[in-house]
Image 1 (cartoon, rainbow, N blue to C red):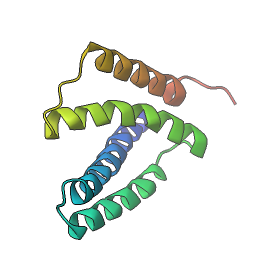
Image 2 (spheres, rainbow, N blue to C red):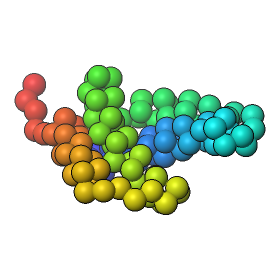
Image 3 (cartoon, rainbow, N blue to C red):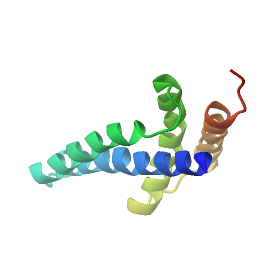
Length: 111
């Protein structure tokens, strides 16, 4: 249950951070306005709180592992929202990152 909870929290964190950054991008780069930017800032703030619910107490480990989730999630967001087509190197790189997440977060540890 702890691994499933952790993975769900990573997914929620990715939605908040990537979605927040996308909203800021849309507000500024695509000239959609301050409301989009404000919504993005709120989502980015929510990301910071979601990470605190991870069961592991080590900030560095959580953020390092989340980096891999962010890489894969960003490509997935681009595919779903912006119709981005990743090439095989994008996909291989994202898979490597997710393997890194699994090792960092879920490898058996003693002590």
